[in-house]
Amino acid sequence: MPDAQRSARSTAGDTTRVAAAGGATEVITFEDVSFGYDRTNVLEGVDFGIAPGETVGIIGPSGSGKSTLLRLIAGFDEPRSGRVTCNTDDSAHCPISMMFQTDTTLPWLRAEQNVLLFSRFRRWRRSRRTLDLKQHARDLLAMVHLEDAAKRYPYQLSGGMKRRLAFATAVAPQPQLLLLDEPFSSVDEPTRIKIHQDVYNIVKELNLTTILVTHDLAEALSLCDRILILSNRPASVVAEHHIDFGPDRQLVHLRDQPEFMKLYGAVWSDLSEQL
Image 1 (spheres, rainbow, N blue to C red):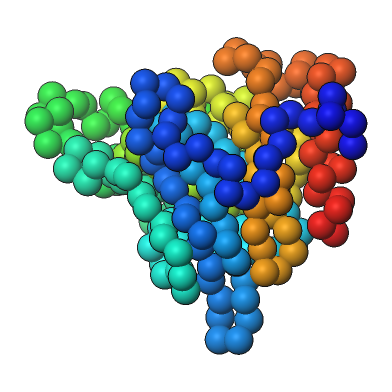
Image 2 (cartoon, one colour):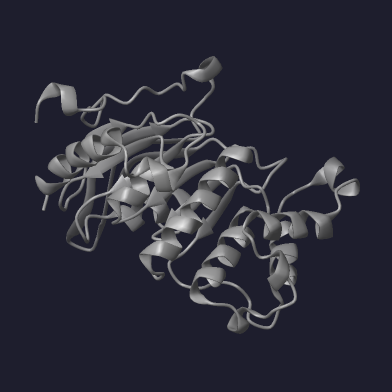
């Protein structure tokens, strides 16, 4: 691929350990991390960092260990070697929130009640005395365009509405780190594109540090500030692309722009080398 088509590509090991903004410590760092099940090596020598407020997409071949990275961050698994460091402040916020592929909303609670329950997971401390949690839940429902469905149960919602509700519950505790594992793969593409705009706006408005695992290149390019590409197993980070479409992205129009298609081609070229 010509150098002009590359967007700040780098290999694992070149990741800067300190965020550019004010020298802030990265929220997540992977340092030479390896992981496997029994005799199966899944990850090997994974090394990268994520700055506060950054949205990073993880893409790679099926079975390369993308979801495993999220499990290591969430603490569901421990690395075989190397170190995963999560620099969150447990005293003030919900450190980590995760949105899965499958529905995790509670079917016996209405939409507003679901968001309200997850809002309580934040360690509000002093701010909790003055925060109106019910209003916080209503505001989030409005942000995902579910204000008219506040009194409905999850089974009364369409597939796209359920995904919007699941996203609202994930951001309700205002986590310091938001993990998204193929969150919108179950909905049709037109619905997914509409959801993407809401997700992008909310993540940026709340300044959430976010990691998105996806197979959808257009989704990653639309929502992320940076994309990391994993190799086949045992996976490592083999390429990196920075995305600079500005802070006020209109995603429907963005996808028609030459810059978007050019970057899509560059990312696909790197990814296809691993398929």
